[in-house]
Structure formats: structure tokens, C-alpha cells
Image 1 (tube, rainbow, N blue to C red):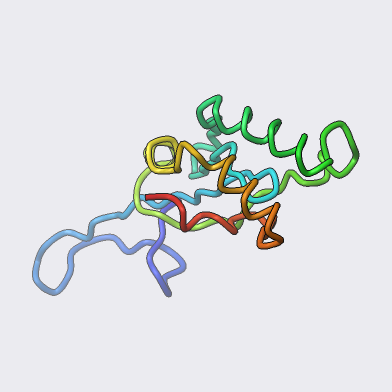
Image 2 (cartoon, rainbow, N blue to C red):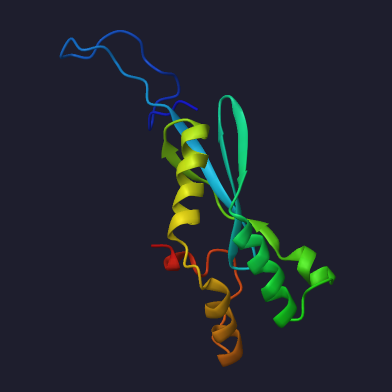
Length: 137
């Protein structure tokens, strides 16, 4: 999607400096969560949506957590899948989905299941989507 704040249509021509206007390609990106755990990224621009699953460790983590929190195999498990809000980012949907997936795959702690278990066991767990996004390095 092309976006210029406060402008309904993109101008054509040149700026007062004589330089041509440059179009800025923008995309929207969001994350799918199971409770607080990210599992998939989706981005959208004028060419349509693109989705990427995160590394297998995220789904494996969801399965582990659902076993110790008692939601595995229940309606609560199915109801816990939720998309986060869209954020606008500069670039194409392909660039946005790749950057966000790489950021989560490479920056989210490898021990996230143990961290969630500890929070769960001590009563400090917040299972809302995005609640542990700050763990991403």
C-alpha cells in the first residue's frame, strides 16, 4: 500500500526543490499468537497477504505449554489463537513478513517454554497475545 499521511491521492510532479516526489511503499504486518506465544507472521500490501510460519520450536512450545496449563485438546486450546494488531512498516509485504519472522526466529529466547512454565507455576503468567514480546532480543 502506498501511504502519505494526510494525503488521499499521491501527488505527481516535482516538489518546490525541483526533485521528483518519491512514493513510499508501505505494508501492514501482524503476528498470530497462541496465548502469549508467537507462531506465525502475516503481512499485507497492495499485492495481497503473505504469511510465514515461525520455526517449528514455536509450535512445539505451544504444544508443551498447552499440556502443562491443561488446555491441550480442549476448546480453550482452539480459542487461544489470536492475531495481534497490524503495524504499518516501510517496504513490501514480502520484506515485512521476512523481517518480522527473522526477528522472532532469531531473537525470541530458546528457553521460552521454561520461562512460561516458571511464570505459570508462580502465578505471574499473562497469557495474552504479545505479553512476552519484550523477551525478543
